Length: 189
Image 1 (tube, helix red, strand yellow):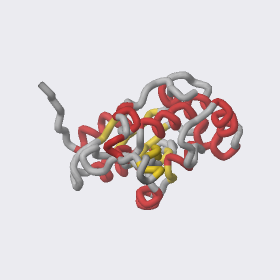
Image 2 (tube, helix red, strand yellow):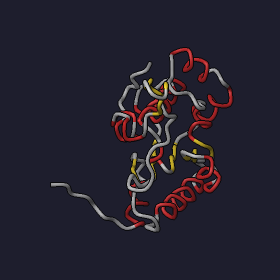
Image 3 (cartoon, helix red, strand yellow):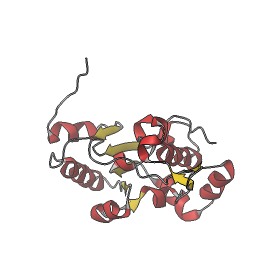
Image 4 (tube, helix red, strand yellow):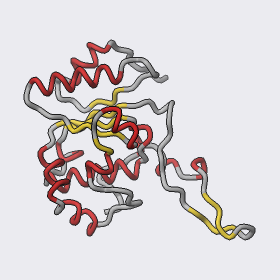
């Protein structure tokens, strides 16, 4: 039997203020953005500037933040090698953002694949030189897995009729799809 807890915005805000890692979810209009904005205000009143990110450029623009791809320096890479990780960690801008962060907010997390989230997590650990998840950052995941699936570059496979066919989202394995399937440590490094 599956149980879940329904809470008010003020209860969710109280949990965020404890410094716990949180997945804030709810249907459209349930107050996710409102709650994150109140938490952001509370952090700023305490001289803590949160790293505000989103899975897409449009979502990042709406919240006044970065795409998670830009913030972490992973860009559009389909995978992360040790060389890539060293290169990203030596980028002064990325290093400064990730190393100085205390709170990472990722909006529209449902649109991130497990692969992308795993790469972000690996960058955080490497830059912060901390092997705790996300290098010890407080991470706030915001989104609704019932709304939008992950955005992934499609892989192609050979087909006798068309020479190449695009694998659809449903043909990808579960581990390539949703952020909640992400493993620690990231398997590609």
